[in-house]
Length: 389
Image (cartoon, rainbow, N blue to C red):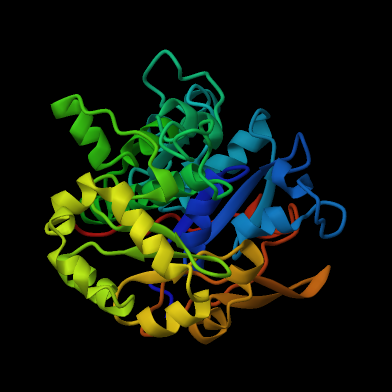
């Protein structure tokens, strides 16, 4: 089942944030026509190594562009702008992830396209937004982590600020945000017949990830700081603990789970210890509590503790990348998929994290650079369907 079948999205995109948004939508059935810059040979991520797939493709590129069509256009030429308008006339949405000052110059905004398609939704994913004095600034994921305070909150207290471990977590969360905005606006446009501009930006989304620590500061002027062993800011014990051969992350978010933990480590005496009688006291005396639990956890291996704790309280092993991706559970859950690529017939990729009626969406490699020009450029395309309010 492809719930977005019949939705057509034109995307002027490169690298991560925009492509991640449209890839999720393509997996779910949207027809995504990826416009690649013909003046430079396409999305620069096609040439991002180290693992190439032929002369103008890479595993990096495919990780963000599964299930898409590729059209090569130079949007700075008159022919390119005409091709864009032709594509926009039959599209539900147009998404770009360019600098904030470029959409209006290239005719990618609603005011430029409403004449050819009054119901089109124009989604703008930029670094800092389109309506401020940073509109022309370029920007990337790691810069946002730095400026939003996320690096200040990441790492050990006595270490330097660190970026989040995921390669492009702000790109991808901004892509998710853009996808939600796009779908919301399409629903409105289909009922009203009138499209709009939708904006989001990397810095806004990075700030939004601060969540409750932002609320604490804005209202109480409380400055959260890096916590030892990735501990929770206000609940204990919620952090990593060493075993005899590795690490576990244990989350005793409730009194019930606290009770299960002390039972499992055979320390029921801690239930009557006045230092740990309540959540607030366990947090206030976290250092002493950590020392006690460390000593007990180190007595056995990670597999021993998982056998004792799995399904009893929230716990997970701290795995390295290879262990995480070779985890047999991923084969059971279907999170690793195999697609065919001309340069790698059995290419393994991450599956879409959404299931429809218990099934993950099917996936296919993105078309080669410009391969879909004959289908989409220079031919009359049907206009977007007229829908009654």
